[in-house]
Length: 457
Image (tube, rainbow, N blue to C red):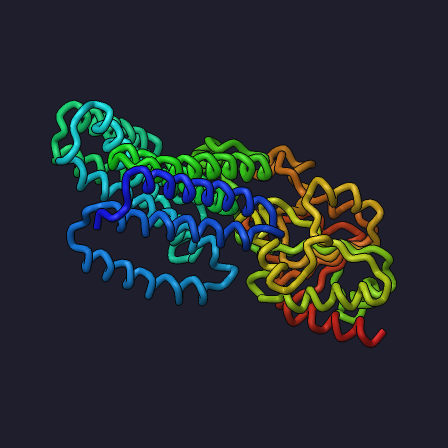
């Protein structure tokens, strides 16, 4: 249906592009994230409607049927997904986007000519295939469908190098000849490259690779915009690619690691995934009642939430405990590490779900100076982001990673299920410090007991 004029189409595309920019701006703050999501969704809907009203489409009923099918799958999946599984969902979205762009480029190969268009096709097929396959592996790792540790095999660097060179050669073959066979070879090699590059990544590095692959997907969408001659795809893809790159660098910086070290650290022993063995060193443990007394007679408490809080679905109990302490005149602040949980913003969203005010959420740089004046630091489910080894042990895989200075607090209460190490697979020296008390058990059960005891003080 070619109803809209080219001029009106261009204006509506511009409005959609502005919506995408405003959406990214909104997502930069927890307070405006919901509004940003709605603006971005409106921009995407507007863009889709414009395509239908400005383009002569074949197989309209088939297209509408596929959209309906996708909606029927996506809406329940997005509503039912647990907060702990949100990174896996993001990985799937990344992969689907990259794979779709690669398939579109393959279909358009016979309809394009010119060196520039063929370069765009080759780039889209290669990077889209890498993004799709790599995202599938990150999903499987986070979902524990395969080992989360780095997977390496003898000669892996050589194999990766050969596949990468083969991919580049196939891309050159496609650009020079436009041969359909070259595009299939490129797709296969790109898929293999995506798998091989992500397999050696493990532990806390996996979410960073998800962000990197998100940037790749954005670049493929931008390149597919060149292939299709669609300016909005070019703009949207560039925005996703740029924001994904910025996020990847921010996450790598928060881990104190380089992107190259994250991707290939396993080959030189630099991965963050180590042993899963439990320590047998003695620690000081306590009861919920004793922890309640520590909290109830404190003046200032800093809560450090982590992935264990999300797994236990204990955010509502934690929020109620914080409210109860504040009612007793105790100041409560939540210290949020940039990579707490599995993705940036993971803890912010989790706590917002429990109606924890944004005003009591403090980022790492803001909260670190406050620990020395803190009576009790309550660590719930976090581990690697408070591990002093990041500052004191040059041989540690997390050495150099910025951490929350929990060790500076007068008293530290650690809620842990067991002595099993965190996602980085290394022992946490903070557990053995004299000011540290451990409360073992499921985080939700432990917090419920502590909450009851605090109310009875």
